[in-house]
Image 1 (cartoon, rainbow, N blue to C red):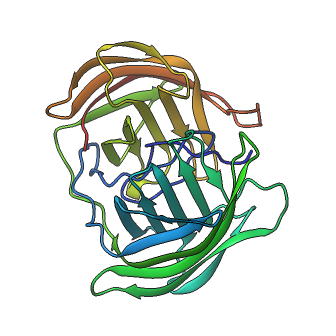
Image 2 (image 1 turned 90 degrees about the vertical axis):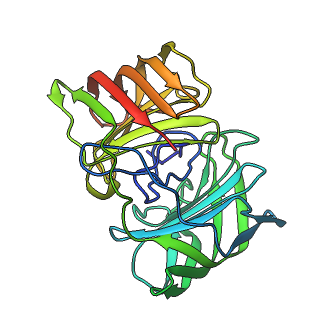
Length: 307
């Protein structure tokens, strides 16, 4: 099953791709063991731009990067709601390729003003390379990264494609460590009756959603995440994959989404950016049955302050 990327559900300060989901985004907030919260993201320095089917685009809202846990990721977001993300296994200054079958190297583009599904380099039906990312400089003193990229990306749900050319990122600030923990947040859930243990918990509001995500060390799977609209009010809501979504990533290659279940918002304090709720859902492969097993997530609860 090819990957379809989703708004909001990003693990720790790394960029992590999600399967069978909507538009991807970046989240800078993370926490320490069993806690949550977040801190201010790295400052948006440098430039991040490319041509999309020949039309010039530039990330004028967010441009940031991460080099952590063996992964280099560079992200840009513009005021017209377009975003790009480049993710590769860290080999330092190097010319990387985006291959359809690569589990570690991929690029994606989303225009959420049109729809919420990403165009991705690994959606093609062949076994070819569909882009490159050439990291030309990593300034370890000032924590700046530069490089160039091109990619052909495809949107699985529609079959449409986009040609990204003349991509360049210059002196983008990158993070290398997780932000300090908060002791004020709570998250718990049972997976098939067993308590889910996590090391990183965060809440983030962006692109019209609030995401709550709990995951393993350095933001790596296993991960449980819930996403709701940013203006959600107390009430009961069914998971529908569009406005309300649940996710369970059992590993870096196994991604499941809520095909049934509900989230109950108990409290949403918009002024203080705190949200509390209960949830339960069945996690299953989406867009096809596949061979991945289903899991029941029950007795879920979160109380998280989000960025």
